[in-house]
Length: 300
Image (cartoon, rainbow, N blue to C red; front, top):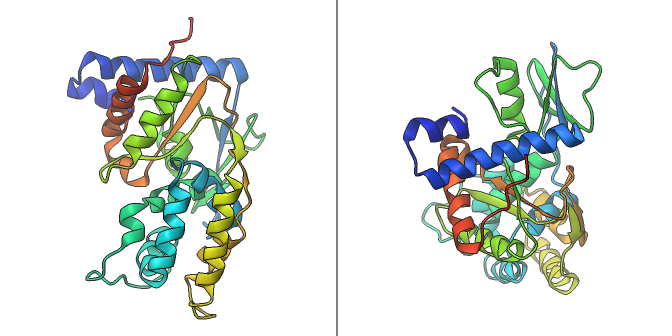
């Protein structure tokens, strides 16, 4: 069930229904104006999902979606508990196959919820998304070979068939994200409220962006890269945890989303675990709007 249909079925407060209606209206208007970005879905035999390596660009995008100051927290916890943190956190992100030690504390994961951000960043940068029998590609226009073609900013509808739903599920991070159009005066407060909300243990938010591209704080990132290089010295050459640290050690300051984001927009990306409770994701965004300022609904 989509976010919109769940809101109607559950009888949530009118304010939440207004948020969902706003998101749908905003998404439709943007999709109509720009005719993109577009998800081109191709049904074909023989498509096999391939695991992509951990890359520096992925790490930079994940770090960019975190609240300010958390790079320093990550550096401290890497220094305190490199082996324990990576043993517990990395398998959840990259399926490294090492069983975590349930009895050991995990200061990195508790103090810095970077695992959802890394998981979401991997999906955001995952085009083309592939699975047996289907391939989905993100682009500015519909691909000529596409079996289905849907504007990314267009909300899911009851008319979506099984192939369309599979395509959206593969591109889950962007396919279920919420684009908010906000005034210049309320935008900074809204971003702060969303970032504060995502630090809660039960948050459904993975990343928040107020721009399509930018640069991380060079001083904080340099300290994090140095700590990652030091931590690499403690990890065996054949360890499955090395790729994460190597990507972190080489992470560039610059980052960029694969979709455009206008100056009056805020992009909120859900955690993978939130796909089973998208209504809670919408409610959390609504609560942040209440705390940080309401979005400006575009003119019809």
